[in-house]
Image (cartoon, rainbow, N blue to C red; front, side, top):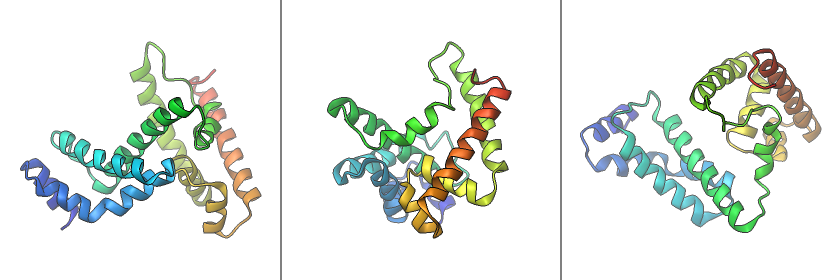
Length: 185
């Protein structure tokens, strides 16, 4: 079943929408969640919560690309679970992925959060589009899909130091852009 047919099932409030979504995207969503959480039980729970969230948000939303919509939900739920787990255990090795970007991305807890988030989102979209192919791939795999440095190096058949250097240079470019736009001072 193709994505538009699955989305139509959601709009028709047909419960087969969840079944079809699971058949087509279960492994994809699970791999995203597991890469973040490294825990089978938590990952399965986040994927199931993804289906519930899709059911609750489609309609009114009509995703242009169902796979990306589900990936975003899964990723957000997994990060929320990671933060919950970290608060419980006071330890998380995955936190380093997000902490690498903390020096570039401003804290969202301000009075004008929504406006700033939209501006930042638009700026990040443009920034990522402006990157060379390899920089873009490294950046997205590291900070969206949370690949390890060694996984990226293995996939692109290059050294870990090359990946680290490219990511550092990309973060530096991002920070300069944010400073120029006066989003982060």
